[in-house]
Image (cartoon, rainbow, N blue to C red):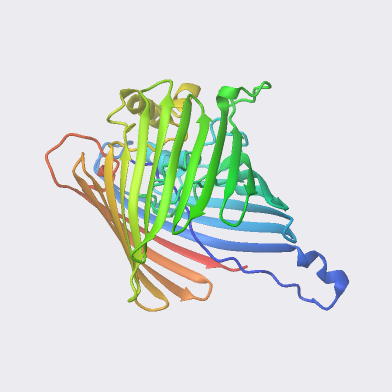
Length: 423
């Protein structure tokens, strides 16, 4: 089965002061803004072996999330931003292993430097939690920029898989997108040598056995450095760093070819617990003049769960019992795929300015699975968006290999998302 991660994309509207001509009343509003939205996510999935009864069951859940986003912006010198969430989840399979897998484990904060999620109520009928989704400060000083807090650190150029994004690895099957993924606690500094070249350094500290260690062991530190520049039509990036029990180095390139963007990236890691690994991806993206969006991408992961028994058993232990320090060090900051070879195709087309159709398919070559994920998105009102989608998979060959796509093999996952940006 697959751990689902939930996220969304939405525009933010600036809150203008009611009396801008009054200097005393407008001063605070000049650097403070407040945004908010409500999101409702409904999911339905039938399973033939529900963990509580071992019988067929329709798993129904509905998440309602209220997000409040205050921001202080002192010119271009300093920005302080927070996303505060309150979530209510109702359904017919709470307090089951399936519910914990889909709705609780994606927000696991084991060994995180900051613990920002609080469970308020968990009953058979509903689950309520409050969390700080993002909390960071960003500043600029001359050619330097700085940031610190819970945020996302992105290094790769790939659209579906980003081998260089080892601090925030994304699974493309996640049906809400990347921005809802739990962030990383860390600090970064960037030095812009010129308009085309930047050097980035990121550091983050993990706990030990989910408790603070006064010595802040180096073995629990994430430290990443990246150099990125533009040469003619190509953007090139080089990365190196250390993570718990791993050392990594890699590169990324994207260039304009026939009016589209060709991308490729690879990451090599030297491991202490398993053999050295290689992760790579390559893809091509194009926007046709008729309004059709096209993306094809390939992904390779030598450290797949089926190829590495230590990872396979560690992942099984995590699903059954949660993290301990040993499983965390093996599984954290890693692309967890059951197999090594995948390819994906994504298409998008705006039928009208308010209606968009999208189609996504992914192929697991070794397990012989093909996943289809069509969706439709409609702008109901200026500030209200609705999307409806189906996710289903088919096995096309005779193999016993496990796959993360198998959870929707016999029955489709149906989900609908409605978002209202009211502030």
